[in-house]
Image (cartoon, rainbow over all chains, first blue to last red):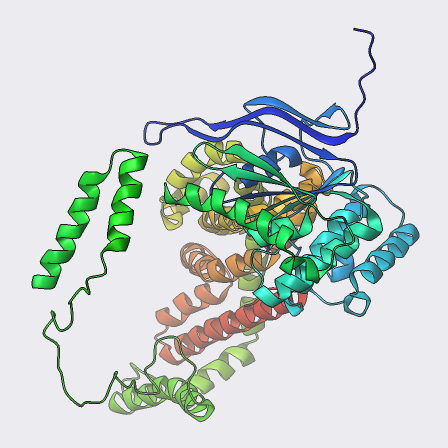
Length: 263
Length: 316
């Protein structure tokens, strides 16, 4: 084989299995069972599934926080063996450093990377500008609303310029209104930065609204049941939510998950 | 009664239908098609007719709720005044034989100690032993506790011996320490360390364990190594908890100090109490006990202030 392998993909997952070994009291659990998945460079992809379907486990494996039992996880062709700043992660909540200010939180990843103080300050200011929280730079997380906190968490993950951003139900703890605002924020951010994003959510509408492709995951064991392309580009706006084609994709995905929830 | 029987019947029907996907779906479809109203009103035989709904709670006796500010101030004042009034009453009843000295007599006892020139020396001697012993104890506890709370391996190794050692009463070690270390400062400081360090270690370990996993994981994905996570994440997150641990166990350290001083000392608050007893100076004994209390309250308040100062982000 002398053929050159073309790799347009940023993230490639092949045959991923994650098993938790059983004990005397607990039987073995297969959280993820043979998942194949790709995310292209600059693409925004969502994995949608019911609670406990293994989608967070999948994301943690990509983040390097958990080791796969079998299978291949590669970023730009390099195998993932542990966590690193090249894969920024955002969690559902409570992951900001409560003793650090907003600016201090965003600066954390730059400190670990050894960025000198002046450059650090400049970069933090730039990121706070992007998330619109410049005036909140010296506040601590406790003083922020839930939506603001998640914007800070996203900025913090973006600071070390990761190859891919992994979002684990980032808007799951927010009220419906704030959630919509942050969805627009994420789309806008993605349009401006063209970062590769893999996001996990249980909200079908959110998944379809944000991504170019949706992976539908079913549980026990966690498998990809379907891959749904979304027929809208990155320039979509809130009107898309009422578009028949949007509703059609949403209904199909929803039906798959409801069927699974029934059984 | 009829309703309950009906519901149970429906439930068992669905259970029997289980066993396969198709069967379950069929059963739930059947249940959905059944629009019969389930009659289950008044099966418990509760009161009927017009009546006030719910139960009103007295404003001073509501679980976890705030009380009016004026009531709060009044109750605090009462809580402070009650023991003093009780003290005065008891001292009136035992006038003459001086079993219970009055506040005025206690004050005279205190000023007598002051004029003898021993009081400050005693306070300082006791305070110094506590400061040195407790500082050593907390230093060991912070290092070992953070490691035990962070690494299961360290915890597995140290937890069993510490779990055993902490049940040996520190006061029972006094004879052994006197035998090994003599009667100067060493055995007293050692006793304070031994009497508090195991509790401090286990409680600091608990504090370190309560660092949310998400924060640790977030740090890893921001490029932090384990050492950085320990120093920049686990430690700062644990600071308020560590101060709380220090505050709670400090009282225990004082009682251990007393035992050490009772047996062998030339100065110190507890030594002075023993000496006062020898000369039947109950007023001085009372004065010394109150000084113990004052030192305790002051140290407690200072540690609370320290916590507010170094960890303003943490709720008390």
